[in-house]
Image 1: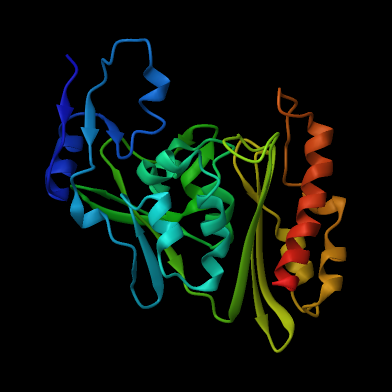
Image 2 (image 1 turned 90 degrees about the vertical axis):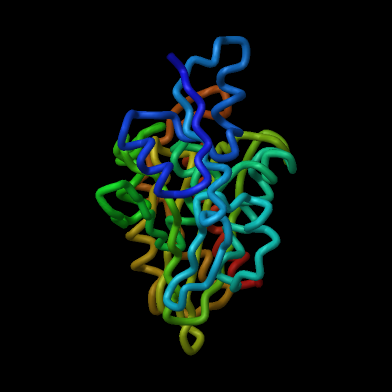
Length: 278
């Protein structure tokens, strides 16, 4: 029989997961629309009352984005410039009502290939914290999402936070998304990028492309070739078709694989140009 659980404390939520597998709901912006017109027969764990999982905060060496941090909170938070890509993506997640309710961690757990938050958090080198009654563990976001709607979260685990380490150098970030219209649209291609600058040259680069593979992908060859380059308008010329090798775009109703490859290269060059112009 379906049940509904809304604990007020984290230890109660973890105990409920240890007792039986449950569907975890935070904002519910993916869960409930997917069940319109059919009986709600899931055993639900609603974590929206866990106030200890709410506040975005600086923890010294990293920023902590807890499980209940919404997209609106990311937009409004006083975050450093290297979060600009994530904040731009936050404005692209559905409409304002979705941004007010939907959570960053929920976006990651849903693991859609077109999830707007994933490329930016990959570029931020984010880590996922998972908790259970047995303890906690952390792993890189690239290890957490393994496929279309697939993650390594165990049935007894709850994603409690995302941790974003602070960069070693001055850093800039941005996000570009291509869709069939400006608003309320699923991505055709998107790029999230963070570039660290030291003495006028690129000290580190992290660039990820989403909606062109089952899982958003970093572009390691491009990242390596950017390091040491002068941080000026010529940076955009570094991006080339060979850098798209990690991608595996498909043909679907939003675009062909060839179109996605073309668009990805264009967005990469625009992204690098925007970082310099900023």
